[in-house]
Image (cartoon, rainbow, N blue to C red; front, side, top):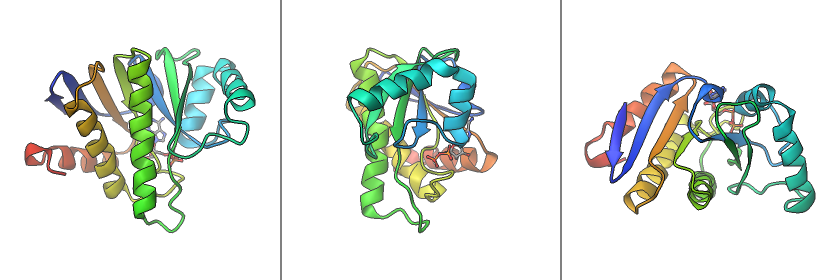
Length: 187
Ligand code: ADP
């Protein structure tokens, strides 16, 4: 499914984010930036060691304590089709609840990834559904935050021409689609 907001196409797609050919793909990383499971593991294993080498340099220089939740950094895409990987860290919902504080951090993760892409002149970007796997945030509420943030960013005007959500499961695709189908994007 697709939706045009100003000059930006918002696309929902079922699939594996490591296969995407947008200029950038976003990694749902953890603050160590040293890899993990889910999206993170798939990106590092398909993208090759170059990505981790850059992550190590970022840790040594900018973020010795780790990348704080809600912030974003960029590395090469290594062997992936995408030229860049934007690494961001979503909140952990250990209780399974998206509290106000966590909602804000999840919004920051999407917004700061978009801002970084915009500042780098990136024209197309793919997102996974951040924090809804190992980090256990509720899917529908997190999807709302994701879509609201991206729609607001596009409405305010951006040079990014395409923003994709790559949904790995049927369930997550259906939830995102139902939300995006609401009239006037009243999420
Ligand atoms: P987090 O730690 O932020 O929760 P995960 O990678 O565990 O990140 O999961 C985030 C979401 O990404 C989940 O909805 C999961 O189903 C999905 N996912 C897992 N692997 C992939 C993949 N290769 N491409 C796209 N989405 C993926």
